[in-house]
Length: 407
Image (cartoon, rainbow, N blue to C red; front, top):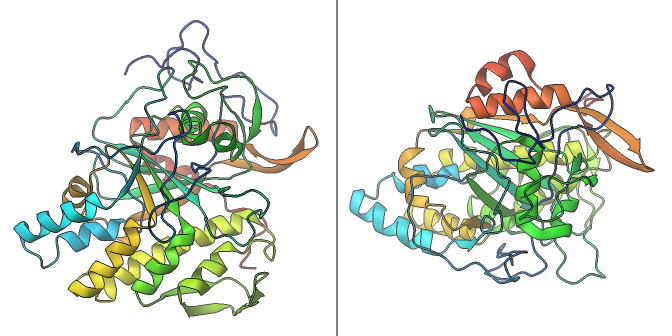
């Protein structure tokens, strides 16, 4: 393993170079002492088809990234997009699959979050494993401010780790209020000294700074970035004919038309599923509940696609994939073909969701923030780098937020 670049937070067991930020001992309950960071990727502009998350890249002249046809054996995908892998290998034949896959891949929105990261990135430690930053934004969120045109809400950040065995995926959700170090700029060689909530990183410097911040916090190098527009998922869910979701507790939506969601399993349309996934104020754990429900929605979509005849019906499949390409934006090197061929065996039961280790909410400098459990977080991301997340998970499963919303 190469020694991490100067300015990055060190992890126990690694050799530090002069001038690097090591992990000093801090009193329990303080914010992580490792340079941390993150803030979802998004942009001040929107474009593309019906809710498409085509996002200007901050730090790159605020222009849209131009698509390259560069195929590499890399992969970036969320549980939902895993279904494409199944679809491309289901009933089309090798030749038809390849042609159709290239057409779909050509329709993907792309950006370039990595070009501005010119220094201080962590090294790639396991060539067979992959780490993908999933950033959820909501272009149609009814809670979004109306006085700032084109402002994106970027409240969902997930580090997805695919082990070298390529037989499952671990999705680590990052609380938007996690108190982290945010570098001065994406090209900085170090992780800086300013601390703020995780979702401030995008506001400060767009998608590149978000990636830089996440890498600073975790000391894990991101191979790909996928931006997901939750507002565009209405069309995806409707293309599936709706999804079944388990409702934790009976609540009334705070958004018009004030739907009632009844505890138990409900079949939801696209608008209904999105409405439920946006709720947080009615749950004791607030944003943690919304994060949990977004994960639940992604899993439900994958389950429905795999079991509802979508993959074997050409018309349904086409509509589904068209909706997906309008709801996601990927980096330049993301290859749909490689993803389909290499990861077609993963199913929803192979997805393990967890939350970044934390100590709950605390008041820091007059604002409520989520404080990292530094010791556990360091151990988790060391496991990611060593490709030993399965072993870490079996011993240290992140505790659910307290109180439990199901009680």
